[in-house]
Each structure stands twice: as structure tokens, then as C-alpha cells.
Image 1: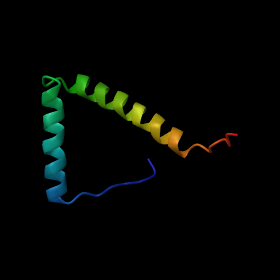
Image 2 (image 1 turned 180 degrees about the horizontal axis):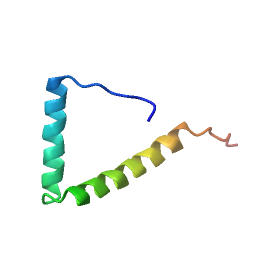
Image 3 (image 1 turned 60 degrees about the vertical axis):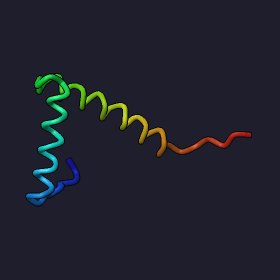
Length: 59
């Protein structure tokens, strides 16, 4: 990890609320929610990589 984010108590509480909703949306199954998050992050990373890749000139 090359970037550490520090949260204040208000940000931590907001993050916890979002995490609780995300786990609840997966019927309380933390592992299922974690796997879904990993897959989502993978798809998002692929999109970021595609956007930041050097573009080839088209003629």
C-alpha cells in the first residue's frame, strides 16, 4: 500500500454506515460482500487502466 488515508471520527462513522449497508445488501454475509467488493474494484481498476493507457493514433 503506498497511500495511507486517515479519517476523523465523522468520516469513520460515515464509512461504517456505508459498510453496514453494503453488507446488509448481501444479506449480512460479510464474505459475499467482500468478494463482491473485490470484483467491483477489479472492474473499476481495468477501466482506470484503460483510460490511462497511451492512446494509439488512428488515421
